[in-house]
Image (tube, rainbow, N blue to C red; front, side):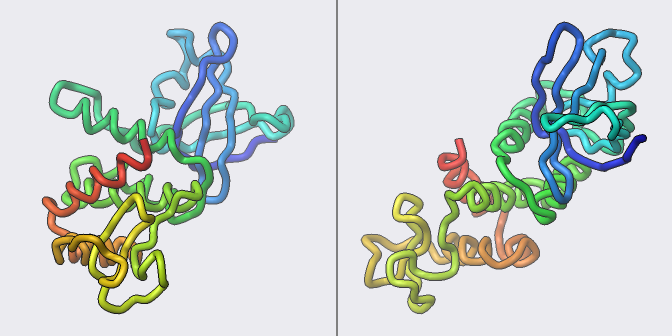
Amino acid sequence: MTKKIIGIIISKNKYLEHDEILNVMTSDALISILAKGVMKLESKNRSNISLCSLVEFEILIKYSSESFFLLKKATLLSSLPPINKLNSHKIETIIRIFKKIRDHNKDIFDICSSIVSDFEGVNFFKNQSYLISMILDINGEGLSFSSCVLCGTNQDLHSFDVYQGGILCKNHSKSKTPILLLKSFYHLGQSLDHYISITSPETNKQIFNILSRLLF
């Protein structure tokens, strides 16, 4: 008996001589799939299971174990472009981010799918920053974006301090964060659409660098 599922390969590990264990995020679970023989050049699945690819997996239920499912067929739906000198850093960063995913939810799956499918899109880098904030949150390292992390007020917000845990009000701030940066951090805690609409590419780059230091 087989079952078809759609998922993103967030990491993979060599298993025995010609096999790999694929760590896959679906919209409702993180699962491991044993892909037998995919290290062989003649494998039909070999070219369809690259890192960060969105794939339709046909898995064998009968032969599954508590540790992993057994892959029958992999159908590539979307993938990152071939790596080259111009995009290598961009692709390597995505791979590093995806490997930090320790849990799942549908929102994370959807934004990861968007990142893979829309590699050259205008909102790619903003999606990436938003994803990092979600990963930090689901991994238990979330920051406060909408109220003072020390007293809980959402009035007179004044600064953002990543080492304090997020946004601070005026009474608890030692310095002032530029207003555009502070607004973008605030909307990072609202919704992706809000964040995209309010944040400039330059501000997003600042936020990405700040959040990346926490994630990595």
